Amino acid sequence: MFKIYRNFTAYFVFVVPALLLYAIFYVTPLFQSLGYSVTSWNGINEPVYTGLDNFVKGMNDEKFWISLRNNLYFVGFSVFIQMPLIILVAIMVSSVKRMLNFYKLTVFLPSILSTAAVAVIWRFIYAPEAGLLNSLLEAVGLGDWTQVWLGNKDLAIWAIIAANGWQWTGFYIVLLLAAIFALPKEMIEAGEIDGAVGWRKAWFLTIPLIRPVIGVSLLLSVTGAMKALDIVLIMTKGGPFGSTELMATYMYKQAYSISDFGYANAISIIIAVFTALLSVFVFLFNRSAKEVS
Picture 1 (cartoon, rainbow, N blue to C red):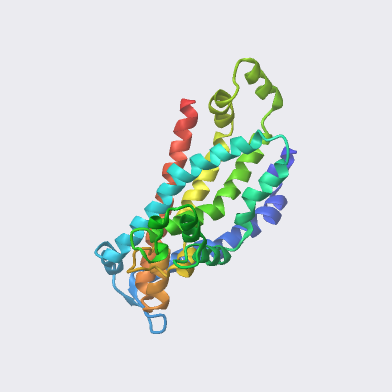
Picture 2: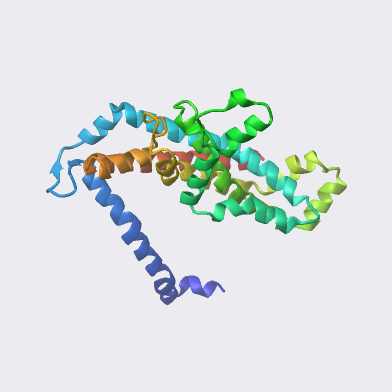
C-alpha cells in the first residue's frame, strides 16, 4: 500500500494534472487579478499603473464599508445562528426511528436548487401584496407586522440572509448526519451505559466526536458567506439604496456597470484576504477547541 508514496509515476499521473488545473484556474487568475488591482483599467485600453490607489480608494469608500459590514452579517449569522441550528436539527433527526430518509430528503432538498431559483422563490415569498409571508401574518392576526421586506433598508439584508440560510442549512445537516451515523456503536453504547442519555449524550458524546466535521462545515459556511453574490443580485440588486450590497456584488458592479476593472480587482483581492484571514481564524479556533477537549 505504501509503495505508491515512492512511485514517481503515480505522482505524475494523479498529482501533476490536479496541480496544473489548480495553477491554471486559481493561481494564475489570482496573480492576474493582483496585477490589475494596482492599475487603472477600463477593460479595453492598456492598464495604467497607479500603485495602491485602488486600495486607498476602497478604504475611503463608504459603499465598500457597507458591503463589508453586510458580509460580516452573513458570517455572523453562519457562526452564531445557523451552525447551532444545524447541530440541533442534525442531532434531533439522527434520533428518528421512522421515516428517517424522508426527513433527510426534506432538509437536503433546498440545497439542490440553484441559487437563482431560491432567490426567485423568496422574492415571491417576500412580495408585499400577495407574498406568502405577509399573507400568513395577516391570517394569524399579525397584520401590523407585515412589511415591504425587500424594500426596507433595515430589513432587506436580513431577509436575504434568511433565504440564503434556508438554502444551505440542509446541506450541512446532512454532512453532520453522515458523521453521526459513522460513529462507532460500541462507543455510543458505552456512553449510554455510563449515563450519557438525552441532552447529556448530545453535549458530552455526540458533539465532541463530530467536532472535526462541525469545523469543516463552519469553514465552508464562512467562506461561502464571503463569496455570496447571485442571491443578492437577483433579489435586490444591492438595493434599496445600497443597503444589501456585498463585497462581491459591489465588485461586480464596479467591473461590469462602471467598467472600473482596476478597482474591481482590488476589491477581489480584499475579498480573498478577508476570506483567508477568517479561514485561518476558524482553523485556529477549531484546533484550540480540540486541544481543550
